[in-house]
Length: 80
Image (cartoon, rainbow, N blue to C red; front, top):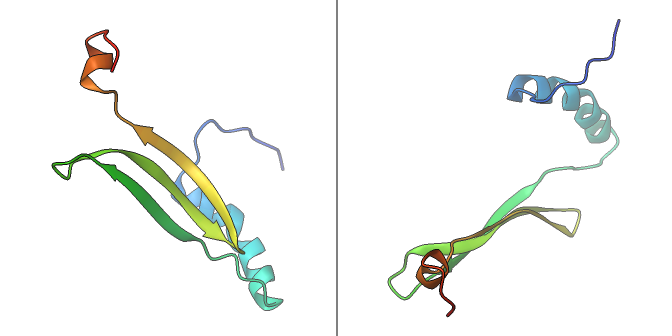
């Protein structure tokens, strides 16, 4: 047996690592189900220009990613 540090983990490896914990928790009435969400920032034409991705679990809100697009003035080196 050995411990291996990995830079990337496949979904199958992740599932294999988490499955015993989830089974234990489910047997004891603990639910770790995530409720994913996305908040989109749309411009006047309805195009998504930014937002937040995350999930909630046990009444806590977890922010996974903040996504924002540069304004055209920023891309051109100017200020808004």
